[in-house]
Amino acid sequence: MQRLYIANEKFDPVNGTGWKEYIQWSGLTQLTEVVTLDGVLCPVALGETKDSYWPHIVNEDYMLDFFVDLDFLLSELADPGDLNVLNVIRRPSVDVRSLDWNGFTFLGYDLLDQDVSISALTNCGGFPDVFANKELSGVGLIPDFDRAVEIRDHLRGMHPSEYHANCDLWAISRWQGNEGTPQLY
Image 1 (cartoon, helix red, strand yellow):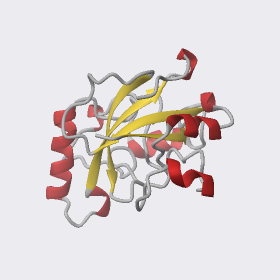
Image 2 (tube, helix red, strand yellow):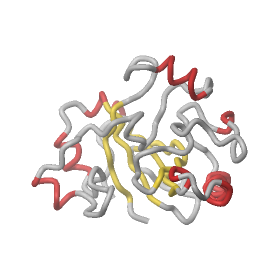
Image 3 (spheres, helix red, strand yellow):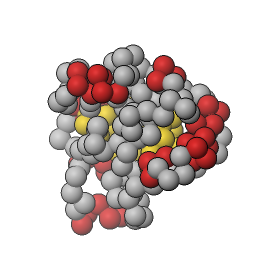
Image 4 (cartoon, one colour):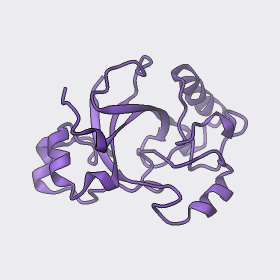
């Protein structure tokens, strides 16, 4: 399982616009913030792919915002403390909560469409026939691996014509910037 890195803008009552409207629309009243790879809710910090990025990013469709080199990503950020610097694993085959995340804190699992652009959990208006809003943590993620897999499989089976329901599982951990620079793998 390859660990990837990305830096996203924060979305909470202080950062980002439209928090109150988002909570009202989504019904996710338990959220204290949203931590996701969903680029609509949490845009990537480095929006332009520079030529110097190519040796340090995932060279695959829809993956150009993901870095394989944490030091390089951090060197490109003006102030990583103002962002969510995330360590993610795409399509984990086992529960990764107990891994040593080396300076990152495991937050939970997200379900992203195949373009890695929209979260089926926090940005599709909900799928009440598959999961309840209250199952999401305070940051909008599913904390339990088995339940996240079950939701992913049910979304695909119950909503085969819904583009955003054909999603991949992502494990997400966040760098705690005030705890110092994370150790590299």
